[in-house]
Image 1 (cartoon, rainbow, N blue to C red):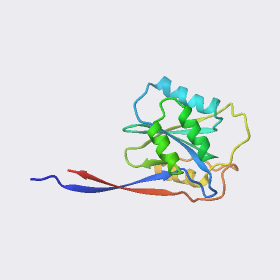
Image 2 (cartoon, rainbow, N blue to C red):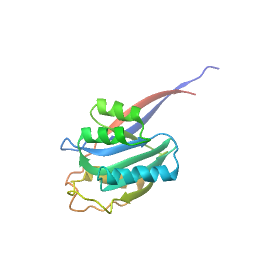
Image 3 (cartoon, rainbow, N blue to C red):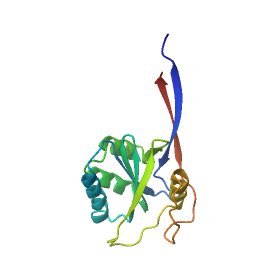
Image 4 (cartoon, rainbow, N blue to C red):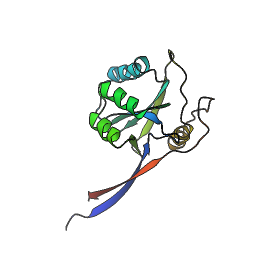
Length: 164
């Protein structure tokens, strides 16, 4: 009996915000030691002054999200200069002018790290992505005055064909 092709539909959240800015997204595809993961998060705080990092685990590694609104170019630079970030992910997403992280059952919210030494101005944050994370992972990221007033976010649909 021959193999049967099955179509799988999945979705990804994009980095785009309603006002043509982006939220930070980083992808680490391989398992790394906890100390290296903590160093990456510390570097995101120390070198790039992001205010929070939401850490999401998957079967393939980790995703990192900051709801701070920043430029596409800054995301690209941060990812290019951060050890262990998947550079294929970085270059592909930068080339299409937005970043995407797949969402699904294999993703588990781990925790939120907060930058207690935040130095610069307080950046506006994406309320739409806050709402999405709250609903996806059954968590509660409180809305403070730094969040914009919009609930929009963008999803991308993926169709994968797999043999079974």
